[in-house]
Length: 91
Image (cartoon, rainbow, N blue to C red; front, side, top):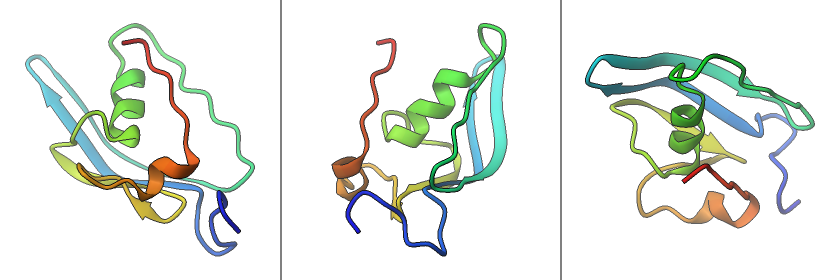
């Protein structure tokens, strides 16, 4: 079914996701979001909430690890995952 992950796979998967900036490192993060799950990223400014979402949306390239959405890898140049995802960031 278009727009849905197969029943055996998560809707989104983050595995070992790490992003480094001067004075800050996000991760490594590991989590699976099962279809129908609602997730809230909560934390103070600078905690990495937007960085996590930007990596999951393919707007930032992680230094390590990977992300997939509906079973499709999130990588520069990949578009398969974008067909079923909408993301409006702060930028």
